[in-house]
Image 1: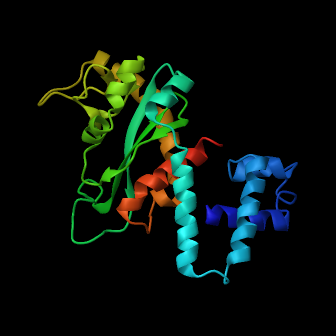
Image 2 (image 1 turned 60 degrees about the vertical axis):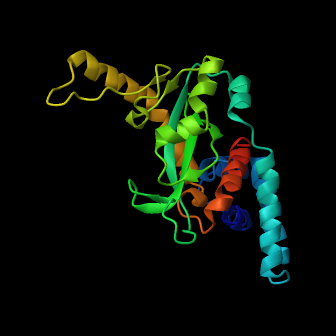
Length: 245
């Protein structure tokens, strides 16, 4: 958040939207930062506050303030059931990602053999348009996506609400409520009909990649210097902020 606030502050101070051809500060913020004018001014307040305390507050105190802010935002994050009731989507898109973070101790629980990096497993649920509806608490990076979905009861909650789930083949075996692509049989090929079904599913699932890309715009999902123990609070805080966009 501090990095984004600094970028917004610098852009506002330089009035960069004029030479770039934008009609207003609001249109520039929407195009460049994907935030509203009101959100931009809130970030300006954050930047001013950070500038005011820079060099006058001990690092430990600043860390405590940051942790407190994250916890306050995390407390406002909704559960999956509440989100489904509020949005009532025709179906949802489910995908998982690895949020890379620091390794703690000598444990390899957070090492993902698939990505060959340390991190935590995060499950993401979006609506059919790719808008992020819910972000799961984190699990160790070695956790398989299907195991993570079952641990968080994502499939059971969606089934209870009557919301079908579309996912990739990592969720093969999740049950009849989850639609995944068909695998090619050993030594054989998919029929033309099966291939058509897979293409249709891939098209329907395409928006989830936009949702994941939006999350990856948060540096914490690309490379966090935080302990895995703090990542759940951080992901919940991100969900709260994403819902304000």
